[in-house]
Length: 78
Length: 78
Picture (tube, rainbow over the protein chains, first blue to last red):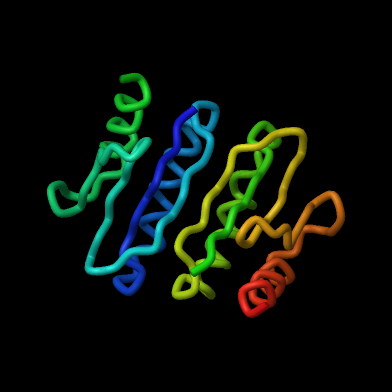
């Protein structure tokens, strides 16, 4: 079973985004996962990892929950 | 910095409760924490741990978000 991490910038107020992504991932993949962790970060970070593999990084892509879910799905089935 | 785990029963549909508790904890203590993890569980489990120390267990207490936040606070300052 896999683990997902969502590292988000606390001072930037990204908790709501992190919770939205976490909820979307858990609604789809709870049966395939051990845990989903929200990791406290700063300096504008918003990164989603599946088993330590980055699948989304705000520095490279626009924020899109459906796209993040698609990438988690493909990483889980890789 | 501390870590918090919220283990909840996935088949019982407790995701919303877990997210509510996680949000309340992060709104209060994000600066004192490394991470908050939602851990997939079953058989009716709903347990909150701070650094592996159980501070709330649904088997022993009624579900009360404010009380859970109080217990996390006292565990963090222990």
